[in-house]
Image (cartoon, rainbow, N blue to C red; front, top):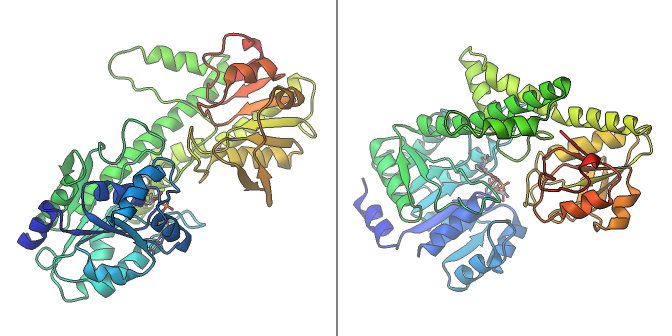
Length: 435
Ligand SMILES: NC(=O)c1ccc[n+]([C@@H]2O[C@H](COP(=O)([O-])OP(=O)(O)OC[C@H]3O[C@@H](n4cnc5c(N)ncnc54)[C@H](O)[C@@H]3O)[C@@H](O)[C@H]2O)c1
């Protein structure tokens, strides 16, 4: 292991690089800046680069008050030029890993970032991939690209995979206090990568290989997808049985062992849970194995928006109303509570489907001031008693904690609550229908 890099990490003189300053990369850059390192963030998005260099954040969990002092003291800067890699000691790749139109992994962003690194690869550089991907990406794709330089991995430079596990909006667990899993291409790579994270993260958990580290992340997200798929199916079953799903889950959760509550909802959203398991099933297909749990959970979860639309139509029907021209006010379009992220948000699928059936949709989301659906930009409207009274039905799709649910139920004619957000409302419960 490089004594030089080890020393620089320990005495905080190592220059840290982060490629991709999004939900994952910016918190990482800030964490290392706050640990006393000089950090350079590289992003192709010039607007993000400009904002960071002006001391401003665009990520919910990172306030300006954490970015500005780092920029002012010179510990954090951003750039869209890869040339900085020449002077970096470490570089963490935090670029998107979406699915293509045919639901295959799209690792083109990773490959573009590696092309940048390859051009400026130098002795003692530590390269870490953080983007979620299928097992084998680091060793099968990145390693050969970097070795074309003639430098030897584990001796001249270092390569590792470490999955980011950030949970946007989580006030308790953030980048610093969420343990880090690290797997290197060689034992020396694992050791130096673990040492790197130890400088800014509370706990590091090394594993035997990059593939193991890649698989850990996919297990975690598949676990969530499958369990959410299970409770969503339980919700479909409870609907037919005439039972309250939420009551069943909460009562089951009173068991102090062997049960972990997951809750149903209008579908999966965000950059991780709807996408990552497909990286794993895609890889397994190439090994002639069909990942049944993943596909089944994906099928159930992706049909939840249609189910919510079906329930909405049934509710309106019970009120003697057709869906066409019914006024529906939607509460929440972000993919989960208290954040502004709308990527893959199931709320958008529900809204599009309702509008296609002729419903008149308005929405309120304090985190999302405007949003596009069905080719038009829509603005969030102020939530007032008058607005609620005008709607035939209020549909809660995201359970933001800033909504006043008592006021909502008091003024709405009827509420379809897909998140059990109205759990604590006591008055007017007869107006509420739960998913
Ligand atoms: N968002 C989450 O909650 C979360 C949690 C854990 C893991 N992840 C994983 O982390 C990775 C990044 O996700 P994210 O949510 O931060 O994405 P993001 O879209 O918020 O940020 C990615 C950033 O990378 C930049 N970028 C794209 N290509 C680039 C390139 N070639 N060079 C430089 N910059 C480039 C983009 O401009 C963007 O700013 C993904 O693999 C994701 O699955 C995300």
